[in-house]
Length: 327
Image (tube, rainbow, N blue to C red; front, side, top):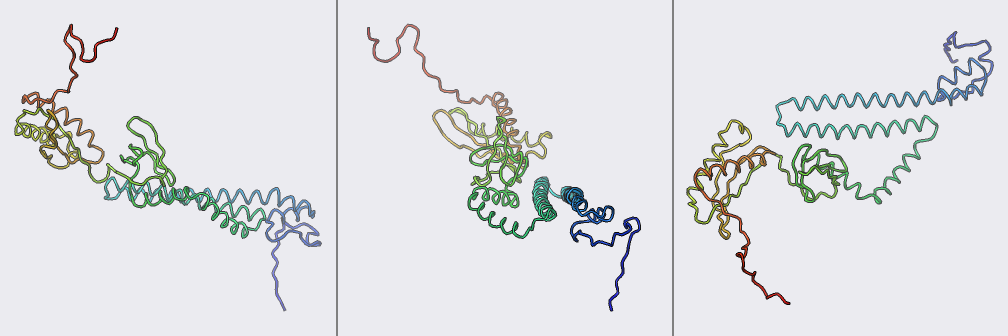
């Protein structure tokens, strides 16, 4: 003996509704059941499924995917803000935001893929063969687009290894500039002339980053051959020390500057080298300030800088050296 319990809703049940078996399948949705109960017409039930049920289900899936994406984005932003607000240096804060952007891209891709599969399943197509064929197509695309796969893999490793981030001043071999955006496929830089460069991550073989931890300003100062090198060294050391103690450069010049001494001897010039350890990205600013102060100090101490070589000009009324003109 079997027991069955049937729950009926008066406002959904019409007289004679159970006289004919419902044509609605279990996956046709409530719109088919309602249309059948109200009209007892199979065509109306099928049209309700096609015109109302499935579009409504697709709309719900799309809205659900957008909601999940929004919630995931809020969660990722909250985690990134919590990390950035912690006792970390600015470099790690930039890295946290870059990682947050990468995670958002991955989450968005996964959500879009899942929602598309659910929509295809809702329309009535089996997703098993689609997934299998997608695997085959993916392998074919992988062989045909190896450079694209290389770009993505290189971009992921560069982001995870923190080789550079947004705002860093880098030398990528083919271009030098400030990083404006780091993506999985390309990196966008802007050089000193304002030109925007897009560099494929897979083509980056080396990275010179001038914005990590600390930087160094290296100045080569030329003086006349007959200059007193002890006086030159004292002047350079005094200028560098004044900059080191200047409150406007507190936290910019990190250590006591050093005068390394004679770097080169060429022609009529003796080249002296001065180095200053600076904050990342501040080396150019420090170099410009040092040049201005060195010029003023040399003028004050009477230290001569070598004059640029000039081409000899013939005296008035004389003919330049060379073969005589032909008549």
